Each structure stands twice: as C-alpha cells, then as structure tokens.
Image (cartoon, rainbow, N blue to C red):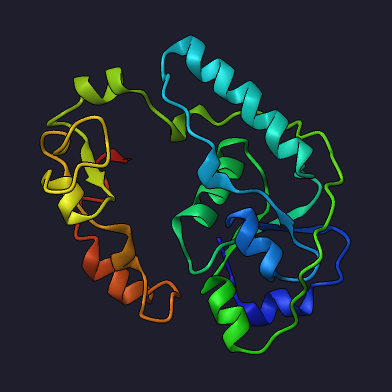
Length: 216
C-alpha cells in the first residue's frame, strides 16, 4: 500500500494514475505534485454508525470519491505532508470501497520536495467518474459492536497519549475505550515522515495477530 517518491516520479505522466493531495486547499494551492487534484479529507467526518447512518455514509463518500475522479479503473495515490493520517484515510476509504489499486506516498510531500522533484501551484480540475465497486463491510464497525466485544477484541487507540489519558480532551469526552492499547500513529513514522521498517513496526505492534483488531 506504499509507493516511493522515485516510483511515483516515474509514472507522473501515466493517464491511468490519479494523484490525490489530501492536505488543505491552502497547502495544495501553494505547491503540489504535478497533476494532483485536491481532496481535503480532514473535512469529512461521520458520527452516525447506525445501520441507516452507514448506508448514508456509503452513498455520500461514493459520490465524493467519484466526483474527485476516483474509480476502479485507475491507480490511485494519496499523499499529505508525511506518511500521515489524511493520506491513510484516503487509502482506507478506497479499500472500504474494494478499490483494487490504491497506495500512499511514503514520506509524503515533504520527502518529495526534499528530493527536489517537480511541483506546481496551478489547481487541477476534477474529471468526475463513477466508482462502481462494492463496499467491503468487514473493515468498518460501529460502537454497538465495539461495546459488545470489549475484552474479546484487541482495541488500538491511535491518538496521542494525552488524548488517551484524558489530559488533553479533543473529543466529546476525555479518556479511552476500556482495555484499549495506546499506539500513537506518529510512532509509525521515522523523523523524515516515512514509515518505519517492517522490523521496527513488528517490534512496536507486539499483538496477537490471530485476534480481531479494532482501531480508532
């Protein structure tokens, strides 16, 4: 699910590849990878995980992704400033819609600029398509299921330690789900914003790989 800056540079002119800048429009308009369209994924939140809420979520996100030009016939590459949560959200959404070929730029735009690779500031218009793939329901769950499986599933809280212990509440309530393990997502990254090696990540995630794992 990762693509290197070198690999992306080689396919910049590939008409079957869609590059999606998932940062804010301000950052995008300042400078971005040539040909990239902007889809600020931080702007989209969904709080209703009831059955009807998920149906609405599916409908709205399919429309948004399609409008941005994402469909199953293109190779989709998301990036943000590092190997960050916004690009990862884009990859996850495409996996949720069973997209066959989606990647995140390892190291993000910072690494791209550090390597003096080409960039531009003009905005690229969307070329809307129609994402027709089926939803993969096994990679999402709601609060009812989580509540019933506390003590059974391995629950990972990917927020900061301060959010986890309630010192800095950024949600409706401070603290965390009972039994959750705190693995701050930034621990996945090296100082340069690239994902850590497989060996380092394996050491970080000392979990029972056979148990069900739920992240939030």
